[in-house]
Image 1 (tube, one colour):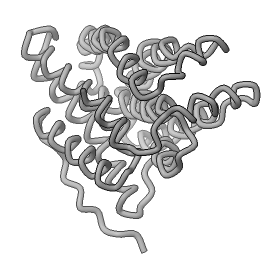
Image 2 (tube, helix red, strand yellow):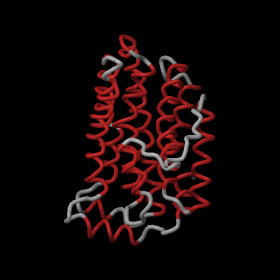
Image 3 (tube, rainbow, N blue to C red):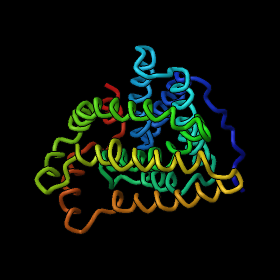
Length: 256
């Protein structure tokens, strides 16, 4: 029998950051790779908060609502998984991958991005600005893409501190920066906006069906991230040999 949920949604960006700090601290204690994505997500959340404070977005309070709704989907999925219940298929793939030690740090990050951006972001956008209000969100939605782009080099540098052979992927055509751009700024952001348009206009009775259908698609997108083609596997294995087995050094690098 599944454990009952104890999840209480965050209500502000500061609370989201605090919850992520708790996830990271627990991951550090338990040597748990679930903390990798939480570290990346914390950096993004802090940067969004700074952007709101600086007046970067057209509607700061609305952007905070979006970011909190968005974050709560990840936090709720993690709570479900850790409580013995089943979150969405997309998050289940990402969380179960963290149970093993065979994947690269980059693969763990991309699996989290896949679930959170390709599935959760469109849902969160439609909840923030439902129906005819959604077009008014598009400018700030796109501004998030630009903000993420500004962070890419820093993320690359952080990974390189604990994955010194990551450059091997450059030489076999799997450039890490292009991979992150593809998921954060390219197809994933476009897919999320199209999903938001669908969710904002669909009848409430149809909404669970539409979300479930997208979840199946996004879970399928995770397959080549988790299990790349045969030709890539030797190079990925070589890179993995130079990455730390312990979680703490990775958390330190990602949090620096």
